[in-house]
Length: 151
Image (cartoon, rainbow, N blue to C red; front, side, top):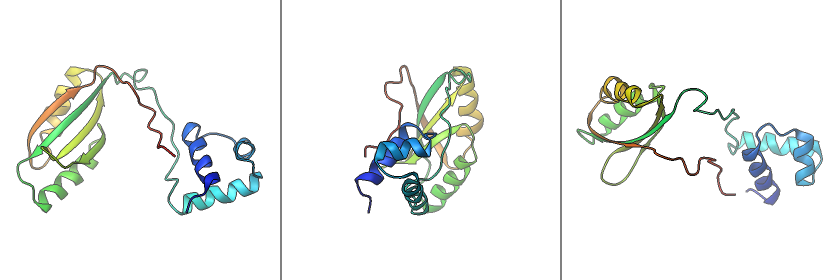
């Protein structure tokens, strides 16, 4: 079970994954050694799954964020498995979620522009196993993107 201190540590790490251990310890009111032990436990138990840098997509020329509804031609375990395996190999796909409702998967991708998206759609997404139809939603404005979990 997570206590209040564990939750505070996780919250601080979500805000700044590069926070120094001494500073983290000061902010939660523990010794650096105690915080280090908690970090090891939180990682070992799977609460912390990794660390990474957050990059600015615009500076990298990835100006267009797109969400795509994907409809499969059949909804069998085999079709789901083949689609999932193939989409995991597509580097342009940032996220892919199987959803309940009117379509099968929601795909999130980021590309340079609409021409690049058109290429991605034709050469990658529509070529994935069992894809019957897609619906595209180009993002006009990103309102909230911090992605921090509510602790």
